[in-house]
Length: 159
Ligand code: C5P
Ligand code: MG
Image (cartoon, rainbow, N blue to C red; front, top):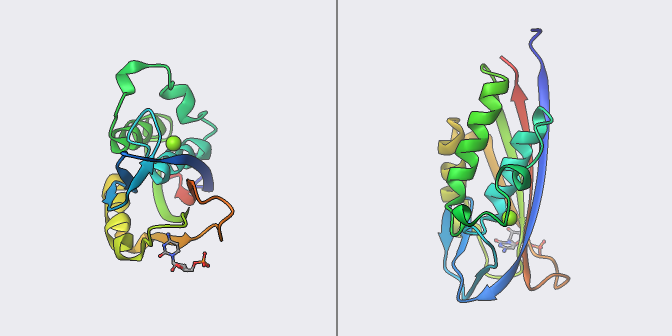
């Protein structure tokens, strides 16, 4: 197969509720509210998993991890990314992620102090350098104060 450059894109959003942990990019962030979800609600890793699947048109995580399946209750989303990566590699064995560009939108708390830990966590999952994982943060300017959202774009080399 001819060596090709591809892109992937994924997004996710979760409602924030009291009494739930806030986990973003595999990193636990101190917060009075966390994502309401069936799994650990890691919005960034869910967007990353969909971005990976989209590279080769392999569907999305809703198909692989149906919200109705009790086996996924409280699931660590790093396991979702690992399983997605296995699925992608089964389709394109020599693929490697060139870089990841992620945006997290959250009004509070501020996330800057956790940026390096998120990049390192994502880089470890993908087996790439943390310098290839850019994570930026935005508030919604009060438009979505009760939600956390993420968008991920990534570039992949086929071989
Ligand atoms: O959304 P806004 O442009 O006001 O965000 C300003 C800056 O605040 C961002 O560029 C980012 O550095 C920081 N930020 C953050 N954590 C958030 C939201 C924004 O660190 N949850
Ligand atoms: Mg999600």
